[in-house]
Length: 141
Image (tube, rainbow, N blue to C red; front, side, top):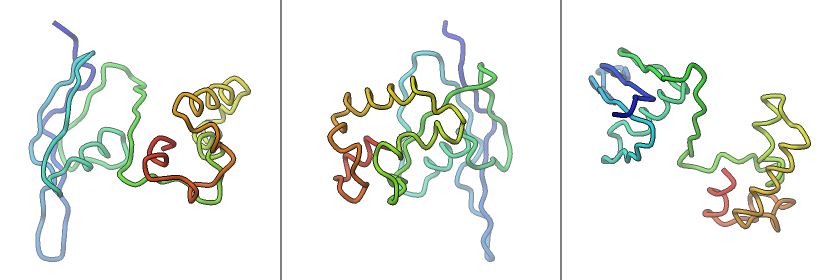
């Protein structure tokens, strides 16, 4: 039996409008084990993005809690829109996280160049996001 890497217990998120409270998520419980492949499926507005925002610590739950087996989990999350900075080149956009974390080393820069090549974006590294297709922007993101 695999050990859970993520446990979600009694998670709820409610939004307040002037007229009412709206639950985006209500009393969600789940466990994700090492090696699991999951899909979060539902209609528009059912709380999928809200759940991912809470898991990645971009938003707070109203109630409940999330436990990771690792005290410092690495979470990757692709937003619905590409969120690229239009004034930065593709390469500069790829380096922005490293710069924020003060981890923009020559080794990491070389790794970014390898990833751009792997995803067939190396010819566009000095271009700006407006020059890319939607799918290419998603790959950069």
